[in-house]
Image 1 (tube, rainbow, N blue to C red):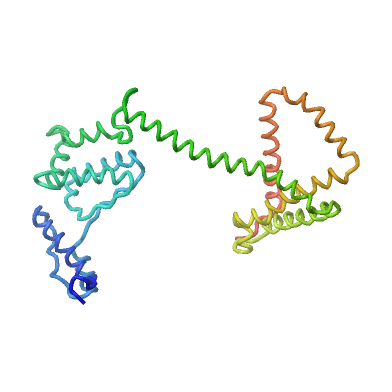
Image 2 (image 1 turned 60 degrees about the vertical axis):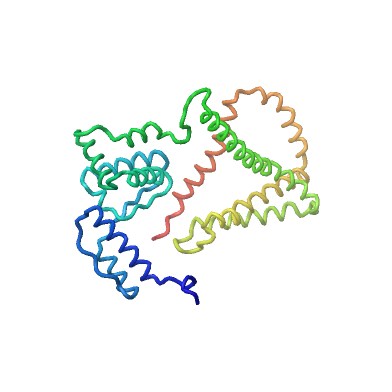
Length: 309
């Protein structure tokens, strides 16, 4: 196999990395313990890396707020002359913004990391003005809209991007809500395929499944019936059977219950009187409809003893 196509061994990669760090330490006069000579196998290379007392700086993400926080960390390290002791830097998201700024400054500074460290330290101690690089960072920290203003291209681009993303998100949300609102109508049409005599028994059967699953979940000890207690288990064994049972029983009530159509006619007659009601009445009614099941569940949880852990 040609030399260029042979796989590179781990100990060779680690040795070359440590040699590079050792040269950087000597170039910047970093006072550290001497590094062991190159290793000949993976175990020795790992031991060599551990004895080198390698140090890394990890800057986490979180947008421009994280970058601002990480700038304070970098300044604190510089004030205590510790920034030059870092051999690695690892960044993500907002940390990448400040990390790229730091590495660019170090690369362009004639004295490298120790020159950057000295300038930041002197500025913090008040013996020198703030470095131009930090002032530039403060002026352009709003990197999403670099130039603000009514006629700024950055501002209008930000507005356009916001509206585009909002439109895409709302399109998906409205589509899902539309499907959810049409689902009961589809279920009603599907009932035409089932003989009317079976609506009630099938609805009662589904309701029994939902009630039984609820009882199992309330009285189950931790670690038992794990799948039934999961979110997907509750949806499949309680919510879905309850929804199907409500549709079937409502249809059976309308079809089989004497006078059911009279109830419907009364409801339609009352609607013109209910429609002009103030919006607050509907909000309060909706809150009560939501609160009653929640309160019932809370009372049930107090009545049913908690299984021992």
